[in-house]
Length: 241
Image (tube, one colour):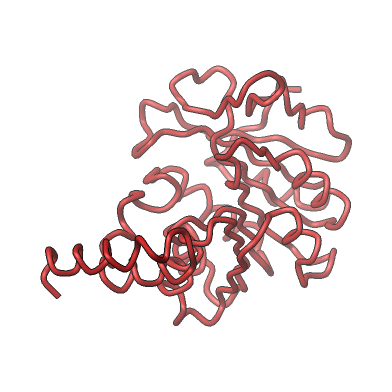
């Protein structure tokens, strides 16, 4: 369908659909190229992609969980680079959910959910002993679910590795991070994971100047059982604490 015709059709129908799943699915059907508007997986950060591949190889995850599907680029990357591993992803925004659901519908290992990330984590159909990778990226609205997400994981799971996007990297001011006001700075100041018993903290082992894409910071957390495996990942460095 010609671009102008598609744009006109989308505008006319989209006004009525507003922010619904159907609008997202329609956007994907008419403009599949919109899947790339957010850049490559993991904010277009090639070294972050390397970190995930290294973790997947070292930890042999049995399940992958993501909060904040958006348009599904990172979801697709994780499913492709951990073949056969079930990938569960939750998206609260109905348009993004509809877009990603249509885009990823042919991937049998991907299970998408529409709703709040905390409810999703509480009801995740996984055993507590499974080696699970969590990618937490549902923190771009005024409601910041990160602290509760982490508590749910700590309580429910024993063998986990968590990567939190948009987190401050100490000593690397060029890595971007989110700040939502008093007490909501994504850093060890407001989220002192380094003081959590039985938790090991890691950061990217590369300067932001050598990273690509959006150059957003991240932190990786490992449970006691997963620590020996994560320690073998050279793309990460231990956090001080």
